[in-house]
Image 1 (cartoon, one colour):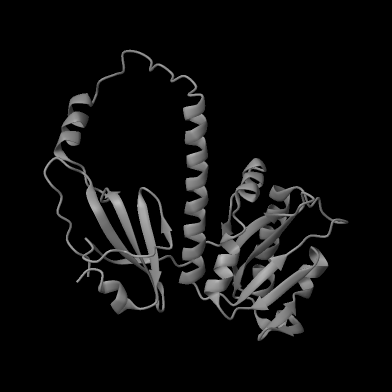
Image 2 (cartoon, rainbow, N blue to C red; image 1 turned 135 degrees about the vertical axis):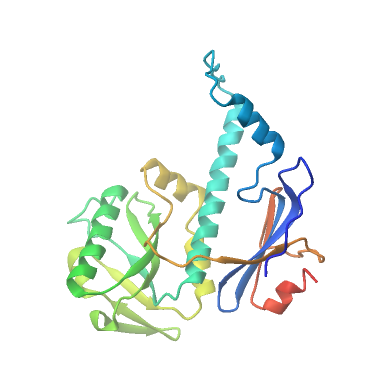
Length: 274
């Protein structure tokens, strides 16, 4: 289904190249890349350079680049913003490509744990989930996003699958969804809220909303990651690529390098290529 890419001689990039990803049932995206380097492609000029340079030793040490002052600071801000956008894209992808059962909020009892130590909390939580799976013969998988309270303490929002309902206790019914307590978690760590998912799109936007500049800075300062996910989760699949014949109007995201828009209708997606 992929379109063949034609690359001009001496060039290693495709200009204004569009890729279609499928996230799951009735969930697609078109990503327009201003400049795209196909994986594995290497122009002849680059191969020649490698061949000439092979076996030669560097005759001098490279000069270290000086600190760039304002340019360095600007670059750092751009890299940080890019890392947030990448994390948001991956969270959206993992959320939409997998069939999650529950949206969850994990909190921690301050009498038992140092709630300001994110790394320690995550280590204890993820170890406990692995042990829970082993002892109860369950296959719980997760996607978790840390969030810092105004007092500096941490809690988690996320998605769960594989947690049998007989491990949960119904405590409320709110806005057409059942709210549960997870007693074993509550005994070990503290208050927990487990909710049925009615609209994954609404839930995932709430998750990525946690990735503010302030929160992500706090996460990085703790030496932690912006999100945590189980191994083996499904990822989006590229099902088509080529040049667009129709403009990608009203994109969900756009910067100088990329433009992206999500769709629920495959025919509408392919209409941009025909």
